[in-house]
Image (tube, rainbow over all chains, first blue to last red):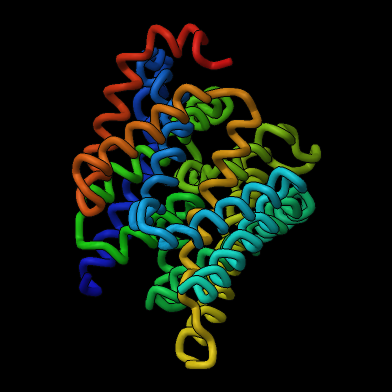
Length: 108
Length: 245
């Protein structure tokens, strides 16, 4: 990706983020009710998209080629255990990432 | 007092009222912003890029996903779709603020632009500022302080990440797993809440099926289409709460 393409990508992200924040004011500021299907997608998409993003992050993993996916498995397990023990995001992210980076070097 | 002096004292009162309210966001935005900045810098996008993204986009999980977009092939349409879908939840924040923010003043564009999860939860948690502070100015400063924390964290993280990247003693391979870990934590947090489990399974299942069919370079757009289609098909069930327990 060139610098120009990176700038365009970021501006696209900025514009679409602003669109999701401004749309309700632009469309329903005059007292019109939001269509139910919009409300439904707004309510369910956040859950679905986080699931999709996990798959997206792991798209390069090869679970069937031993032990290629072992670092991913270790990282996910440590992240989950630390999170479920403390219910705090930051230690889980740091611990899981550290475990992954160590496993990557040990397993290779 | 002159007009300028009145404005200045009103601003000062609003900042003084907003500062203590934003402390919980400070303690979460600085480390999370730093993680984002370090991740971005580890992919070769230094301090300027981190500041630019945090200034222009200002959306946590989207910026993490954006690091992935910046390291992949140029695909503005895919970037647009992904952004709209990740940030679809913001529609609700806007809807929830419609009544309270009816009418226009010059702080409104920024308040809308900066309506993050954290700012929104602060607006909901503390609806009334002290009597001498204008509510809209109070909210404006809450949002602006929050973005300052986010930018400070991003820039600090990017400085550290860039320094480590240019020093051969540090090997950052695998630091991009922090994005995976963050999404897993958000997923677990949502799952524990008990809501949206059916939708979460639709997301994982749809994305996985598309990954198998289309391969890792092409599956993301297909997955977004499939997920929206599946959610629409399952709407009678999910909307009724049948699968959501």
